[in-house]
Image (cartoon, rainbow, N blue to C red; front, side):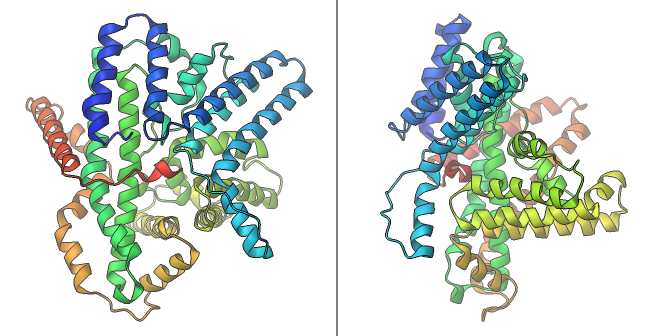
Length: 475
């Protein structure tokens, strides 16, 4: 079930809110209801994969108890953590990487190993990482063990953030599971946040998706240099508004039920370094790898540069692997490994943070970061490495294609106002407008009118079928 579907918007969500606020009063009853609703939400399109979810919940609940039980016995506690990692990574590998691994073994070693057809449970990367962080936080004394499997299940399966994040740490909402206090202000702010994400998805992400999908699936002979760059720019805006839109909806839905999730995006496209970009993009994932992989390896406080490079390689190789079973994702992760290694070794990021650059150098830094993540998105979007190379050839004029063509002009003209809106709202324009006009009397009325109008238009787009799935559902 998708947040941007009529089934969710007009049936599931109103029913859940009615039962939660009108029929139920006790916290424990509400928690059980939310857990059952979340499992139903996940099972809506994949009834069998809810069993994988339940296996993950019960397994990690048991590992949390075991780690807490043997806390004073360090070797046994570490053995429990190792068993937990093996348990989670085995499930993760079977569903996400077994087919990819066997296909590559057959190709590279001329083997004939049968490759089973295994469907991918939606959101397995997200709920697996949440489950792992729960046990690790218990092991590191960052969170108290949860005795109730129902509460562990609610943490892992809570439907607002279940499918595509943000990755919520257990310690962030542990107290909220039992002690949250729902109120009108939180509910109204949650509704507004949901509408912002809904509008991002339906009006901006889906519009840019039409351009990006056309560009990345068009034969090279029909392409032009301009349209290749346009397709890359469209995907750059699509994936931002798609994923940040989902995160807005997830944070808003959580707020409606009294949960406060941490932010997942902070205007990443205004970054002045690649390091800064990753402090702003998919914050929950980058902080997860930082806290559970990079820092345990030693982080940047190591004795040799060789060790620093190794730590960065491990993190970004795993980041690429996390995103999917395709060489394009691995190369995408390694692309950022190269860029971040250069920035770390040269001190580029520290210079940007500690010295506010003159406006001209700020523009240079910003253009470098824009170019870096746009090249990364070509790898990310391409079906395979061969397709990525072909697309790069077209972008940089190494293919026998014209500089422009009628298709490029048509897509640019038809979506001109969406391009302007996409660029403006990828920057902190809304925050600037709020600070500029919130002291005026007309602001509350204008604010409400804009939200209502945006929601109505977005619903109209949804009803008439201008829709495509959330990109990060595949991860």
